[in-house]
Image (cartoon, rainbow over all chains, first blue to last red; front, side, top):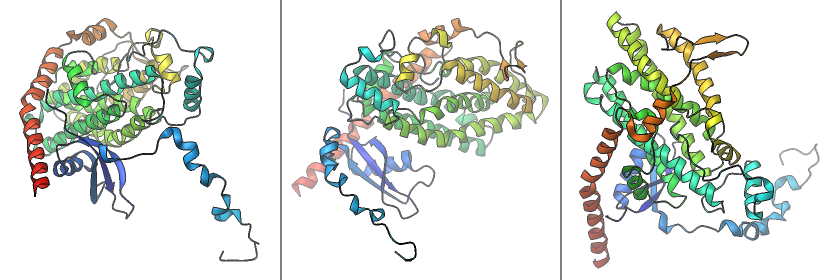
Length: 94
Length: 329
């Protein structure tokens, strides 16, 4: 059996100026065909104006098991949120 | 449905006392509607069941292209041909989204395709029926895609993140399919008596197989309870089937054609349509491989896969060569 075409992750930027967003994955032999396949698989209805593809094997992700310690540093820093600071009602534009 | 009678590998639903701490933690997260993601820990049975279910669903989309593809070259106008091609292309896309979702569970696409060709996994019973006339294309969009939507909308909320996300994309596209089918039916029903008779004939042949798509009655579906607990099946077969009947009968009334069921009637007290018994022997025969088109469907898929092998090899060889060249330069 021939080896399988590598897996690519597909990211699309929509018309509205938002960042590229992950939409799914597909198989393709190289980057050029990955972009072409992504157009056919993920943008059949004007979903985007730009496509990024990256080999799935090249993605490094945080481990789900480390979620607690990884995000712990920000958990106790409520003062990072503007709502932490009560403002007097009569003061405007804050 | 597109995935019928998916085995869970369990004999009965596990209760809390039989679960390991990991399993109990997993079930608690599912109960709290936290999505399960690819790298999260999950019970083996959950993983295996999902692989089976998503894979059946993906194969159904791919095999489902065949009955409709049969009419691309014979569509009655250029407009209908273009629309049908777009629909069939969507089905290919749906198959690909779903294969990707299944791959996140650790099975390769080639393996899934091999298993389909070896007859180890099923696809929906509905695609083993032939498309004899153009009206069948209308009936498929209206009834088969209508039944599919019925099942797929709840799956957008299923517990497995990649599957739920694929279903959301699919559902957005399905309503085009159902409407194009109904549009064909409407055109035929407003046409000559011969055209209307074609529409009626298609309804006669597709109605019962469409009801079978939802799978066996709840009392006989052994695996449903566990799948419901895992939230990969959100409504029961009979519930979905009844909703489909209730929604579709008034549509047929509008078209002026009738379901091939003498027992079909509105039940005022229940607020539902009552309908006649389904021929489950036919359903099981089709699942076993003895429907009108089972052998032809698998033969066609296998041939397409084998005939395309050289293309896959050549593209890979080209990519390797380009990569080597780039390295050397």
